[in-house]
Image 1: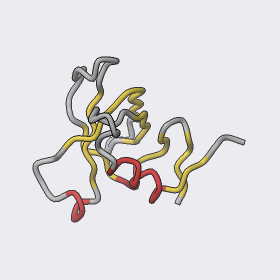
Image 2: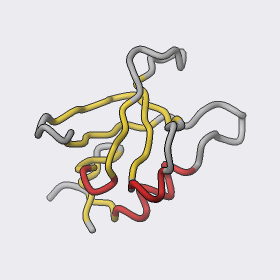
Image 3: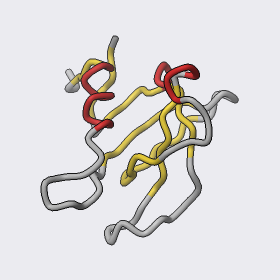
Image 4: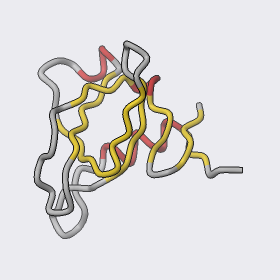
Length: 92
């Protein structure tokens, strides 16, 4: 059986924006977009969105390379659509 993580714990990890060295925290995430497409980002960091995160149940993620350089656009991710976090299956 694959490792699992509860969604609230994954969101707590998401909220840790940087490590003790001052570098952004990198994670991997798999989520489902509104149109049903599955997106996997093997290296991503947290970012802001131009609207209320809590009211809309959204979090912002952006893909990065090994040097933390942006490699794509910002994805608004609904917390209910997160299916995998750091190679762990997300459960309620």
